[in-house]
Image (cartoon, rainbow, N blue to C red; front, side, top):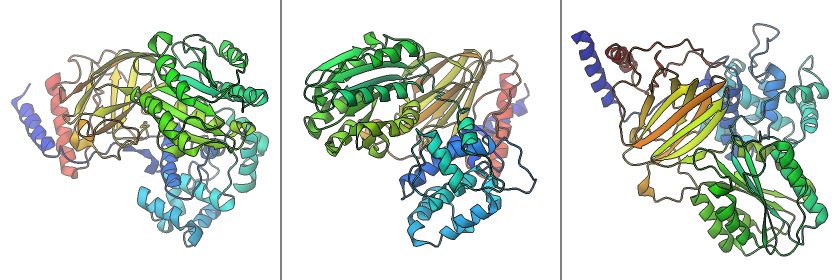
Amino acid sequence: MGIGLIKVALLASLIVACFKQSSLAGTDNTILPDAFGPDVVDATIGKIAIVEQASLLKPQDRILIRIAWVETQFGTAQLTHPNYYGGIWRVDRAMFDVTVGMFNMDRYSDIFEAISTHLGIIWVQSTWEHCRQPLYSGLAARLFLHNANPIIPPGWSVEQQAIYWRDNYPHDPPTGNVTYFSVRVAELPGCTNKGIDLVFVVDGSGSVGPSNFETSKQFVNDVVDSFEIGSDRTRVGVIQYSSSVNIEFHLNQYTDKSSLQQAISSINYISGGTNTEEALNVMVDEGFKVTNGARELGIPRVAVVLTDGQSQGADRVRVPADRAREEDITIFAIGVTANINQAELNAIANKPNDTYVFEVSNFDAIATIGATLQDTACDQSAELPPLAELNGTIGENQAQNFVQDIPPEGITIILRTANGTVVMYGSTTLELPNSALNDFILTAIEGQGPVEIFIGEGFIGQVPNQNDTKANNETIGKLYISIKGKQATNVFSLVTAEGDVTKPEATEPGTTQPETTEPEGTQPDTTKPDNGVGIVTTTVPYIALIILNAFITARLAIAL
């Protein structure tokens, strides 16, 4: 090893240290022209959801992901001529011009203000050519649909959305008919999360009645149908409550979907009063007990509370609900009929309420929220303790999502794999980072040793978590992680430690990097060098990036 390489490494280390407090930029393929693929679509829809939450633009309830697939198969379909700029959502020039014309209409002013505030886009300055970027294509599609017909059919009804698409999303010639839309949507994959622990808390009080109780059971079965059921996948338990509380079955009782759904259909209606407070206590104390099938680490815990009326009041139900959140249980609250107590629902559910609280007018209408509930439940993250050591196995394209508090001294993440290849996407601002949108990427490959990264105060840039029950001085932020498997079987370990315990060499010397391919729809990933070590790209002047590249080269040379 030459002395010159050591000097380069030392110099680069000093320069990198000077920029340690800089903000960090990872990957954002939503603004990359001609980017494509499912992660790009998910990331784009996630950004559009921010605008929906901040304006009068209604939640799109799966219509955008379905149109992206039907029109261009997430951007992979061959378009008819080379000068077409409609992008993933196939927004024709005339359609885009309509959205620009909306800019000067007063009734849409809050939407464009939200787009400017949250996405930094002045829409009237956009051009059709910008739709080569997925974010612009998706926004144009969403704006065009809102102008054509703001009432989007519920996501549970593919046929109704197919009719909506046919009538409000014109092309010449048409892309296809209602049947074509429905057939293509059926090809979309379901939940890719490895699994969750899911407990339904179902109201069986006298005001529900036998017929509505049967409808409730069908709703539970419909939600369950979207998950892969198994002891190492999603586990499901059911609690029925009235004046008393019955545990119908625990999380570890049924390990296949057929038996599970049959058991749900066989639940007998008990009738009585509405003791929601006690039902929540039983859910926390028994429903998510490890000896009853709940998993200790790495698997999200989700509860769905279904009620038709009022019980003990918001103050009474808030106590067990907050206790559940302290145990890292995410709660959805579904209120049915006009008798519901809004304050109780809000006290039961996680925040924000517009994500975790659902209200429907009658039991027949609860099917309309099934698709949204399925999607949100699938995307939940498991809470990791400050000092964690998690060993897991995931399949190809399966994902596991985690969230962890960042202590004042920062946190080190160490990832390794004993078999296969796993990729970690991380962020302090995005709850579901992926290959298209993240703050950093780590790739662990069998035989290459551990990869690691330190996340300190200079990395943080986020809004407070509304469900955080910890004192402000205990943490400086949250770290969101998504781990995805790249081979048929991927055995990995994830270790977290407080403070900076990273080592000078993140891979074992003398190893050879297997050939890997970049995710579909992306440019080569510049946030990791060829040895698989995750290096965070900082938003510093270009000259510093050049020196950082020299630093990486020197570190590799020293390691070898």
